[in-house]
Length: 325
Image: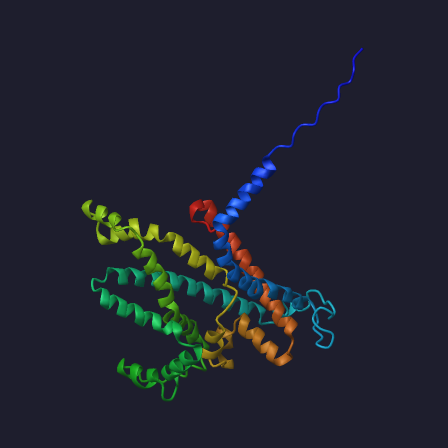
């Protein structure tokens, strides 16, 4: 007769205790670093993530008496402001094309300047030039606006009164009334102001390259141009990719100071200078509708996120080690 024997309970594995010990040891080892990170994480939470709750304004008709969260929902009506007007295609086209040109110029000219600064034999002279190139970045757009106006003023501007006559051109141009010139003026102004910022990043990446690569290439008889092609450009590629992707993420944003203040908000220039940010600002001033401007901001943020994600996916398929994530 078979008797059922009840199996004795197995002892609990010590995996849980071992894991707790590892966590405690990890916390003791890196606790000071986590403590140092805490202020930055709190700032990031308050400054970057909590304001995201305000995105609900884009889907509401804001009533200031009842408050934002008690205001009625209106769905996608605020977004129709950007797409239902006759200016929708023009402002979107201007925003994308200008930013694409800015990205290309910042990349090509920034890398070229970094290579030139690195090739200068006099370190003191190189630092002087770097400082002069970086200085415009710290100027406010108000100051830049007056500098540009000093050049382009149709009556007393330096360009009309001195530079063009010296070149044999006696015709006086009214720059603020003719929109055809501004697709060239705006990239020049933007590059002049910001190129030093990008050149510093690229120069730092070039300086960080081990000199032994260049010494070996020199021994092999490689020219300077060949060294740039085979050593410098491939090794600074990660920095180029990161900076380019950061700019791509903001391709639907525009520098408000550049497009609103430098152009002096001249209505005659709207065909070539009106972008999403200035268009929304003007609509906000006229209508006072914060829901409309919030919808535009959310639209720009979502599109920027998608562009960064897609760009990183493409880079990841081409070269996995150069992708951001």
